[in-house]
Amino acid sequence: MSKRIDVKDLNVYYGKFLAVEDVNLTIEARSVTAFIGPSGCGKSTFLRTLNRMHEVIPGARVEGEVLLDGDDLYDDAVDPVHVRSQIGMVFQRPNPFPTMSIRDNVLAGVKLNSKRISKSDADALVEKSLRGANLWNEVKDRLARPGSGLSGGQQQRLCIARAIAVSPEVILMDEPCSALDPISTLAIEDLINELKNDYTVAIVTHNMQQAARVSDKTAFFNIAATGKPGKLIEYGNTADIFNMPKEKSTEDYVSGRFG
Amino acid sequence: MTRRPSQFTKNKLPRWAIWAVLAGALILGAAFSALLGFSLVTMSLFAAIFFVVGGTAASGAVEGSRKAKDRLATYLIYGAFIVAVLPLLSVIWTVLERGLPGMTSDFLFRSMNGLTGAIDNQTVAEGTPVLGGAYHAILGTLQITLWATIISVPVGLLAAIYLVEYSTGGPLSRAITFFVDVMTGIPSIVAGLFAAALFGLIFGPGTRTGFVAAAALSVLMIPVVVRSTEEMLKIVPNELREASFALGVRKWRTITKVVIPTAISGIASGVTLAIARVIGETAPILVTAGFARGINLDVFGGWMSTLPTYIYYQIITPTSPTSTDPSIQRAWAAALVLIILVMMLNLAARLIARMFAPKTSR
Ligand SMILES: Nc1ncnc2c1ncn2[C@@H]1O[C@H](COP(=O)(O)OP(=O)(O)OP(=O)(O)O)[C@@H](O)[C@H]1O
Ligand SMILES: [Mg+2]
Image 1: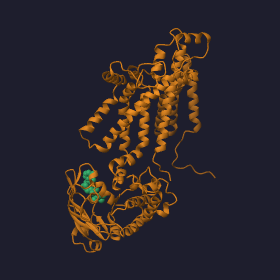
Image 2: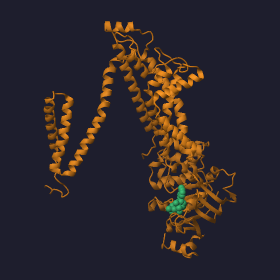
Image 3: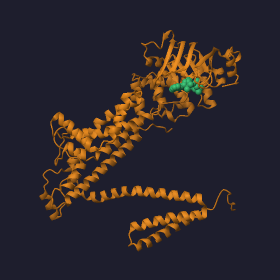
Image 4: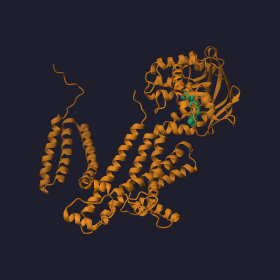
């Protein structure tokens, strides 16, 4: 259960403002793709177009195509809710539901949709998802406690468990480690490495080492100036992007000369 | 071994000094008040002034001007607090003092049915306990408020949900916000006249029932519910909505299962405060529900009393024009019941808020 994504001629707008221009790229199934680039270049914006979360913002719209195994997500007849159940997302700040226990947080995707699930199935799903997020051992004795009582890193892994509990095809992560300490970061990076056995993963990061450590492919975005649209500058194997980039600006960025 | 004084410490007024100032202020206050003919009020007033002036001056002399200003501000704030709380305490005290003697089981569980002025005259003449009660008015209050709540909460809640979750700032939402603002300022008697006129148009003039009163009260309640719910929904972080959307949850399910549960404690206390606001209304009840002396359990037919109108009539038209004491006692007892009802509502709001509050403990 993992699908590839093809992006074709994608323009992303906030109202009249063109935030990201003309992106073409392919995200392979069962791989980790990292998006890097200076702040404000449209990485988050682009990532959110991949599961139609972009249009949640009033006035936001998209031109172009995003294909999930060949099916256009932006076809008129497509229900965005259906898209999001196949392409999950983990946000920059951990956001467990404050009214729910750890267990209910993991089951949120099932329960909020009022799907029927037997207690034993639910227990199995909770354990599988929490194990998948490397959190089971830390929380197995307090599943009934509120999710917001966990540490930041644990909360973030809880959010990952919540995302994989609905068994999506693709998982999108927007700077999932930016609020975390190095140890939690490492735990999440390990997790990403495991996730790619089953899922397609796309991750936004500001951390070059992290991109180098976890990703198979890297996409570098940049803006010419503030107010100009962000563009995909270079896309390729991570090793190539970091060791022998074709573009001058990519080299400047990954070597830390700007951004 | 004694430590050398820290270089950070400055001169400090010894603790007893402030008590000394207080004692001096009290004595001086008593003396000055005696000049005007002694009374506790003037004495505390003088003492307060002397204490503030004396305390500030003493602190200024020993501790320097910054500390003195600090003390002055502290004293003034305490003073403001006392001024704010005193009337409240005095209201509660007065109502307790005058209302408690009338709080008999007779009062709580009997209506005024068949109670004539002659009976009151006899009670006064013989010195027996006051008869007649406010059972019908308590029931009326509960029924009318309940119906007002049943009408207002869904309307107010849905309007707030529309405003916060669905509207994009278009003409409709601006119109709703505008009218809600206008409705907040409507005098309650106008709401009563409106409901009376509306039901008069539909069911014939002079239609007065508990339900008409409930409609009038909901005109007053709806804007309060909309406003408070709106505020509560607005502070639910957008991240939670996005987290829910990202799990493939539909918008209305996100609203009913994530947004509202997160905000429910605030919404519940907003609703309770709205109820507390209308439960004491008198004027709109008089023009919509009329007045009854007996129990009426049918909000859709017949006149009805509530506690405020009961109090009003007991004071304005005592049951026995010659011996008014029983009526006045009943009025105070009814006032006490009303205050207790409102306090219980506030307590309920707190309980509900605590019950639903997002749990953060480990
Ligand atoms: N809700 C919004 N409404 C209007 N413009 C927005 C909105 N969110 C982002 N933008 C604009 O879109 C552009 C891209 O923003 P985006 O958040 O995608 O950048 P980013 O690459 O994720 O930056 P960072 O690394 O700081 O997270 C920026 O110019 C930003 O100002
Ligand atoms: Mg971003």
